[in-house]
Image 1 (tube, rainbow, N blue to C red):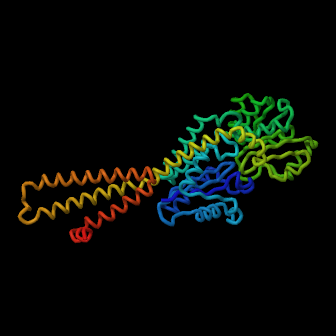
Image 2 (cartoon, rainbow, N blue to C red; image 1 turned 120 degrees about the vertical axis):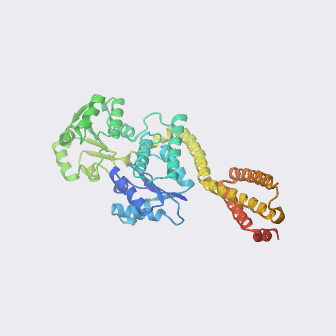
Image 3 (cartoon, one colour; image 1 turned 90 degrees about the horizontal axis):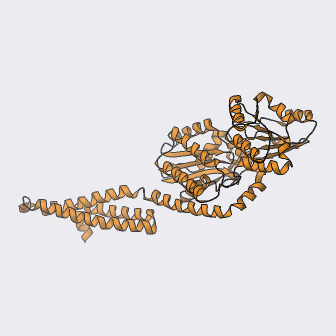
Amino acid sequence: MKIVVLGLNHKTAPVEIREKLAFDAVETTRALCELKNRFRQAEFVLISTCNRVELYCADKRAGGADADDLTKFISEFHNIKPEKFAEFLYSYSDADAVRHLLTVASSLDSMVVGEAQIIGQVKESYKLACAVKSTGKILNRLFHCAFATSKKIYTTTSISYGRVSIAGVAVELAKQLFADISSAKVVVIGAGEMGQLIVQHLLQVGARDITVVNRSYERGMSVAEQYGIAVRKWEEVEDQLISANIAIASATVQDYLFRKAPFKKIMDTRRRSTLLIIDIAVPRNFEPSINKLDGVYLYSVDDLAEVVEQNRKARERDIARGMEIVFENVTDFMDWFGARDIGPLIGQMKEKFAQIGKNEIEQFFVGTRQEASCKEVMETMVNRVVNKLLHCVIKNVNTIAKENGAAEAAKLVDSIVRQAEKISSGPDSNEDEQS
């Protein structure tokens, strides 16, 4: 059995690559079903967020699904040639793959360390995998280990204190670039989880004139009522941009909402007054070339690096403690992962030892001794001796597992099983062993 993760993230790939390989919920479900049909003995979970796309696989077969297979699948699914994105990919296996997931789920690998959104996204990805039955014993255990690790880090460190989300960093950037945010008209495009976080952070920094625009007006109305802000229908988004000072976008789309040529008309209507746009959506809401228009200052999620770095430095001690917890839990998981094959091997060893005892009894009670009255007592005694010897062997196996790892313990038990097989196969083999 092997665990593999293949992916790319904000550290390895620019947003223009990430957005091309992103999966929405419907695509994730379809991809998992296709993978399960293609690799029937494997388990899969797919995580796709604004900052990462990662495919986790556990395969029982030697030579089963590997990083090359997963790369090929992503290429075919998105109809993008591998050479267009292969250089941005990373892959990890076994302990390194486990460490990576635990780090991701705990936000230690996030653009904004300590952000709480990632654990919800990981749980949702796992939930989708469970719904289509693409996960199994190994990944179930692994992802629950990741959830427990995240919880421990969040409860035992101060890593989540302060402004620790992409939304918070976006608002922090807006505050830095716009001297008096309390007097600015801010348009929030998108009323999903990220949109709500943006609104919360805007209110915290003193923004007073906030309007949310969302495809579902009912959803936008709900958010507006919850936070005491204005709401407008989707058809009015261009009118809102004409009068806005700041626009922060996080709408979920598969293509740009705004392209350069039509957007120029908006800017012409504004008479070239400055518009700050922070686009934290992936795929992006605004075509990058819009930034070339006079009066537009367009920032993508990848442009938040300086604010993010300030956040990271403030949490260095918590990051170090978080990584200690990650490594501890990686060790625990790998001990389980390595030991999962020992149980069946121990069962085989018990069967072989019992067969050896039975063979010895049968060889002793032959001829005139066949009907001896002590036969039942002897059988009980031999079984007791066999069980005591088994207890000693198993105790030593456990010691080796603790000191040298489960893999070494499994090798030892496998060796004993093979030797016991030879001994239990009959008198001739027994004599061969003695000679």
